Length: 119
Image 1 (tube, rainbow, N blue to C red):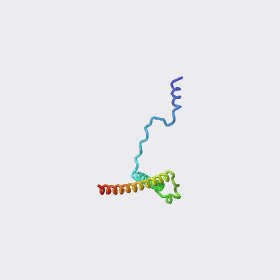
Image 2: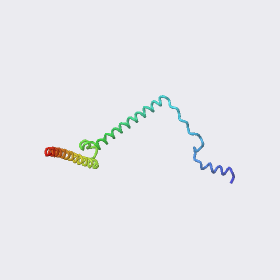
Image 3: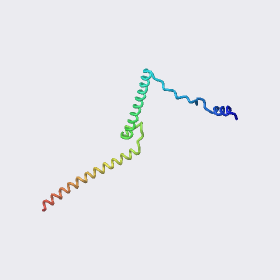
Image 4: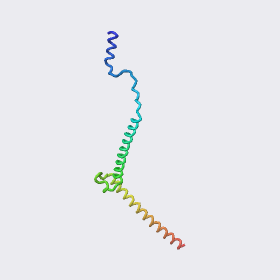
């Protein structure tokens, strides 16, 4: 096989546009183009911010809102409902412990007075 045939076989398999040209340099934008780009990005940012705020508000309704406030947009979350009932139970237990503590404190105070009186 001759040298020219071998070279032609190699170059046949190269994809078009695979030359060793440097990548194109970025073109400079005019002030008007820059202003338009900034306005476009600002608008996109405002839309994304509004969407984020809407999603945050929906999340707050799901996690903290009452059942009446959530309907019709959201179904009650069973995990939230279970946690809410557990919270109510813990708060009830806490109130009972505080009452028992107050009663025990009163009884201790009465017993201390009796002890002092009997001495």
